[in-house]
Length: 84
Image 1 (cartoon, one colour):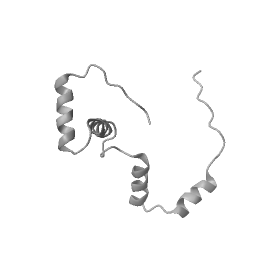
Image 2: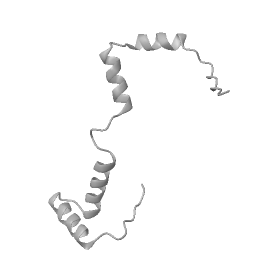
Image 3: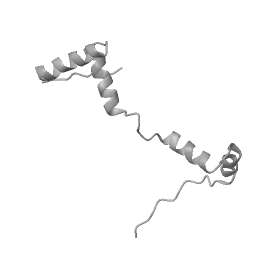
């Protein structure tokens, strides 16, 4: 777990955090964690795995389709582009 220090927080902001924490029945530190989590990882964010899964369902892809693609896929490394 990572520890973070917040310097130069105004007294007003600290008081407001304490009040907000009390309203949510948690410590000021827990309230700050909840605020940071919500800001950094919003619930509506695009999740790549979920998006790909939805595309597969939309077009009716099955595991058999994916296995068929795996069998014919070219496994050689790609050649780098040349700008000559």
